[in-house]
Image 1 (cartoon, rainbow, N blue to C red):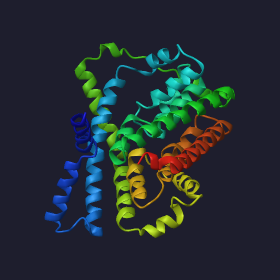
Image 2: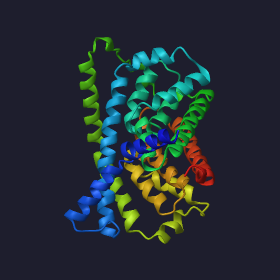
Image 3: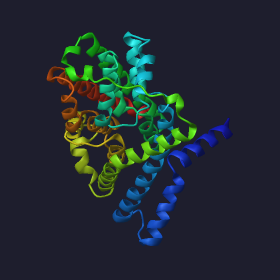
Length: 338
């Protein structure tokens, strides 16, 4: 048993946390720049290079694998599968479907349109729309690599619960009439995925990796840069004054700060990491991350194109309240997971 635990810990440290990469970057900083990583500049350079390379490696591998699996499930086939279920079960499946789509909220909206056009209940599509930017598998692996598996799994659970509850409320409220009419008339075309060869699926997966990397690389660089600055240059007492774990308003403030920003979860994770290292509560950091990915103004503007204002307000209200509750829960009990 001790040997198995050691093997699992070694795999976690080397494959997820990539300690080998951290050591290589440390050597690079010390030998190339002549800087110790214990000083601010050296620490910032190490944080930036290590996090950027680690995120791109994990992101590329995970998106490739997820995209390969997704090549077997076009929207019409997915609709047929989900169409066999109804009520809470359908909402749960819609939320789970969101976990295998490595997209930001703006990228998820076209899929939302496709599923709605294909006849899926509105509550199911909103469960998908909530979970997709928050709880995709790639972000879960990255969370585990930055924090630990306990936090990653807990985050998945609460994110899925929020998606299921949100979709169920919207379904019970009978808000279908607040979806723009063109969405229902925008018919999707099924493709013969069975005709794809293994090599075709490899090409599709590779193209998906390149497409997503092109969309998110700038946000990753900006996010890691901000994280490096927070970690090494901003005094801890300044951060604690506004976002300290003992401040009752920290979760609310972090959520409000996150809304005007636009990035995907991969760009916000390094910022969350740096905030936690500075003493900010894990719930506060996660609230900021969730607000950026699920409630950003650009995604709200895009969603406004496909739903009317009443449905948009209901959606934003449900997600905001859910994020606040999750933040306070993690702040209260997060120490059990650290």
